Image (tube, rainbow, N blue to C red; front, side, top):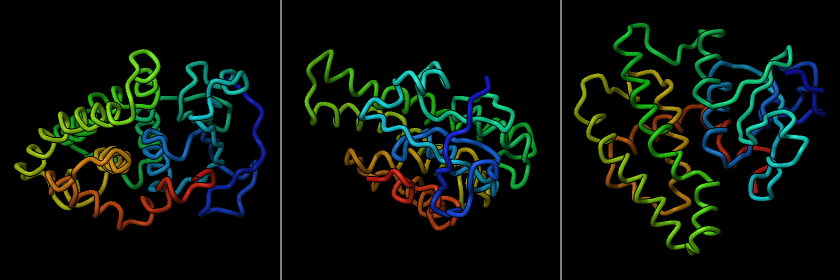
Length: 236
């Protein structure tokens, strides 16, 4: 799919970048955890990109202009230099890792790659889908859930996923400074983005000391800091 490039919307750390000088166009929302994942990967790879925000709570992702870019109406969406559309954060991140292999986001060995994907998917496939904005909105509109009901729902599914995740990370010799060894990768990207979302719903992270330790190690890195929601041009 080919689209016309939007006006220059430079990410904060690359304020001099303009249309035509970036590698990619990233359609996203500052508070979206899936968007945060892709921003971290782009930053870790040192890739420049145009930042195009869509305010999910205002329904901008459902407007015809964006649906013509991504018919699914979700963020993130990454547009390559030739106009090719990529969606789904894990697919985007693995594409970036395969085409820009340094620094690697997955281990070199097959078992290590499987373990990292397992950890990432415990978050991206089991926790996030039932806690994303459209599900939380549906709880309100279809079932009359109030703010506390929604928060309880969110915390329940995070805890369902974080309890086994904590046990796996805490008990494995493969866990190092980060989820797998001493360099950050795909699992750390997903973990960090999820923990950031958790804070808005009062998830008690003291129950998960290994997760908290890994997240702190990630947030000490410039790439994770630059990609953080509060550092984006559409942050409120």
